[in-house]
Image 1: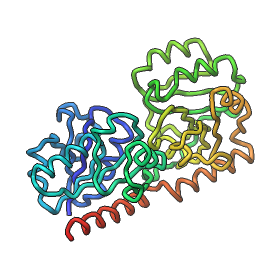
Image 2: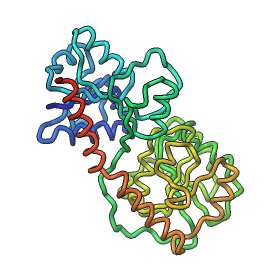
Image 3: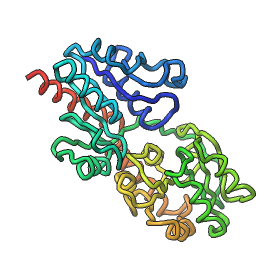
Image 4: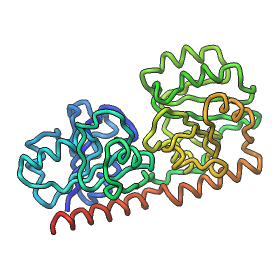
Length: 335
């Protein structure tokens, strides 16, 4: 059995792309995986280009690959809808599983889903059921899992300060600019926030933090190389599917700081793995009371964050679940 992965955009690096390739590689052990894309092949980022055989997503290629022994694992609702259409045009059903990575409130009547759907979080599952009207028994939640890359690299000493990393695309959804406006002038001097990532709001963010000693922009970071330099991992987005940066934080034993949207609370358990605040006003108060890394409470949160990763978010657990669901789908298809 072969698993062909489908995701339209590999022109930039991101969480959905990372997971799609991670699954493609592990579900096709021993052979180079095939990934169908809409990105021009010359525009695929170098970090991805050698990891799979990328082919254009087209009627021709789907027909060529649909040999009855190939399952399509689609990570985008437009591609999933088109795959269902292609199957109808070929007068046969394609073995197809849709992986839902995020929540949506648009294009309801143009979105079609197969019998088997994987949601990466409980928030995504709820969105499929409540907005798209998908029957609950067709949706299984499989948390994204990450390879354990925690290391014992000694972090930079800053014992009199608390360093908080906020990684992610710099954009309105992630609220970095709004956060700076809300927190500026209200934090105690020992709190420092470091924004990592790229995106459309980078220049606006730089202007907002210019001249402020407590906010820092550090560009794109390789988390496994730099996470030990920080004490907490923070995310305060308007919307998320299942944020990989929080999983990485747990992996490295970093307590988490988030708001209360459902997707982040699949990872951050307030009082166990970190802290959750409903709005920026509460965040200000919470940040000013954060325990220092040498405190007993911090060490307890750190240990529990690491255990939470080991229990729910390892790569092995994710791959095992996907393999089982794929085999069940192929068995159903061949009946």
